[in-house]
Amino acid sequence: MKALVYHGPGMKAWEEVPDPVIQDATDAIVRVDTTTICGTDLHILKGDTPEVAAGRILGHEAVGTVEQVGAGVTTVKPGDRVLVSCISACGRCQYCREGRSGQCTGGGGWILGYMVDGVQAEYVRVPFADTSTHRVPEGVSDEEILMLADILPTGYEVGVLNGRVKPGDTVAVVGAGPVGLAAITGAKLYTPSHIIAIDLADARLEAAIAFGADLTVNNSRDDAVGYVNSVTGGRGADVAIEAVGVPASFELCTQLVRPGGHVANIGVHGKPATLHLESLWIRDITVTTGLVDAYSTPTLMRLVEAHQVDAARFATHHFKLSEITDAYDTFQNAATTRAIKVVLTS
Ligand SMILES: NC(=O)c1ccc[n+]([C@@H]2O[C@H](COP(=O)([O-])OP(=O)(O)OC[C@H]3O[C@@H](n4cnc5c(N)ncnc54)[C@H](O)[C@@H]3O)[C@@H](O)[C@H]2O)c1
Ligand SMILES: [Zn+2]
Ligand SMILES: [Zn+2]
Image (cartoon, rainbow, N blue to C red; front, side, top):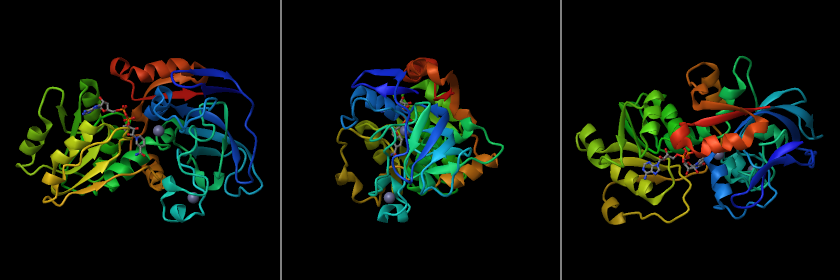
C-alpha cells in the first residue's frame, strides 16, 4: 500500500510500504476512506517530538471501512464504516475505566501516528478496535465525522468541559485555529453571553465569527485584557480557553479570567510558562490541563447527526489521498491559504 512516512525532521514521503497485518486479537485492519492533517503532525515534522521514530506512518484522524478483525474483536465487523479516534483505549486499565483513555496504561492513549503507524495511509492497523472505533451513523458524511477524531472532542473536553462553561458566561478563546474553533463550537452549546476570540491573525478571527464567536480581538494590535474587561464590566472572562500552546497565550489567559473563573489549557506546550501566583493566589482561579480522552465522542456524534453541531464547516480544502504532500503544503501555509482542515479522500 501507499502511506505518508516520516523520515526524520523536515522529511516525509508518500511511498510504498508493506500492508498492515493483524498483530493482536484485538486489532482491526481498516481501509482509510477519509483522513486529515493535524497541527500535531506539523510538530512531529519539525522535530519537536524526537520520540517519533523515523519510518513511522503519520496521522491520527480517520474514517474508514473495516476490512478484517482479530479473533477478539466483537463489536465491529468487516464492512462497517467507523471513526478511528486519535485516542486508542485498552478499555481495561484504571484510566480507561475512569473515562481517561488519554492516559491509558494498557497500551493505548495517543499512539496512532506517534508510537505506532497511523492513518495517513491506504490501510491502518487499529489496536483495541472495540474500544477505539465508533460506528458511523447513516446520513452523516465521512467529512463531518472526521472532525470527531480529534479537534471536536479536544475543544469540548479539554476546553469547554474542563473550563466549566455555563449559560450566561463570557468565554475568551485564545487561539482560533482548528482546536480553538472547535472550542467555540462546543461553548456555543451552553449559550454563553459572549464568546470573545483572540488571535494574532485576522483570517482566523473572521473564521471565529463564522463559527459563533460574537466578539474578536487581534492581540497583535489591541489590548485583549482591556477589551475583555470592557465587555464584562471590569470583571474579566468567566472562562479563558488557551488553544495555542505558547507561554504568552497561557499567561494571557490567566490575566483575562475573572476571580472565581476557570483557565482551561488545551495547547501543547514545549516551553515553560510562568504562573503568576503572586497575583493569582487571591483570585480563586482554577487552572486545568488535559490531553483529550475522547469520552465525549458519542455525545458529539449525536449532536452532528442531529445537526446541532456543524462539523462540515471545518473542512476548507479537499485532496485525493495520493496528493497528501500538496495537502501538507496547503495546511502548513494556513495564513495565506486560509485552511482550517484539509480533507483527504481515497
Ligand atoms: N490537549 C490536547 O489533547 C490537544 C489535542 C490537539 C491539539 N492540541 C494543541 O492545541 C493547540 C491548538 O491547535 P491548532 O491545531 O488549532 O493550532 P494552530 O497552530 O492551527 O492554531 C493556533 C492559533 O493560535 C494563534 N496564535 C499564535 N500565537 C498566539 C498568541 N500569542 N495569541 C493569540 N493567538 C495566537 C495562531 O494565529 C493560530 O490561529 C496546539 O498547541 C495543539 O498542539 C492539544
Ligand atoms: Zn491531532
Ligand atoms: Zn487503558
